[in-house]
Length: 274
Image (cartoon, rainbow, N blue to C red):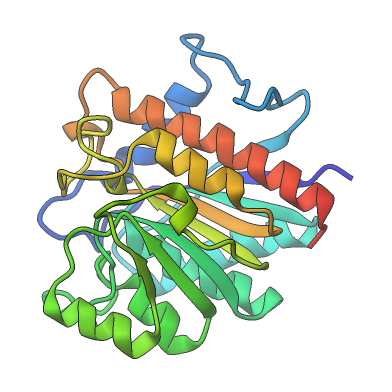
């Protein structure tokens, strides 16, 4: 049975710090994904539409000012996917969207395991007085018990506060120093994958609001992903800021991640249905 993937745009950056712009990310990723500049094949040979069943559900009509109302819309979209045994693959938007996404999935599947790619751990108790900041979603997730295990890859700006938070929640941070893809553990399902584009080095992905040198290559990200064999209940790609992009290279990279995540969901969930 082929898994069904729901591509859901979440155009919001109300919880961004420093500057806004990530709300334009879903449109930029879609433009690159469906552009005739490339095609819909994946590195393993599977093709979206032919082998992989991906339904583009468009963008949710988020208010971008009211977290409570927007969380309900996100939960409803996840519920609609789950009602047809679908898997939500969400396009941000800032990283704050991961909290309501994981909350909705945990309500159905129980606590999930999370594989998180990022330059930053996003574990602040609150950031600049905002507990729903894009710098705080994983603190909210861990506090609520929505995740059994959180593995973070690409982290290279770990403040003392976030280090304490990681210790508090038992977060597993894989250091960038001497990084190899085989350092990342193989996680059990149900598995959720969250990719903040700034986890990738800004030489490959400049279109982010918070670039941090010394990051992952796309090849390393793909190597980590392809080693994961557990069934996947959801995934997101967040924090693309088109106003910071150069010749759409970051949007094109994000579109490739959509294809490769879709292929991974197809393969893993076909072998081990949720």
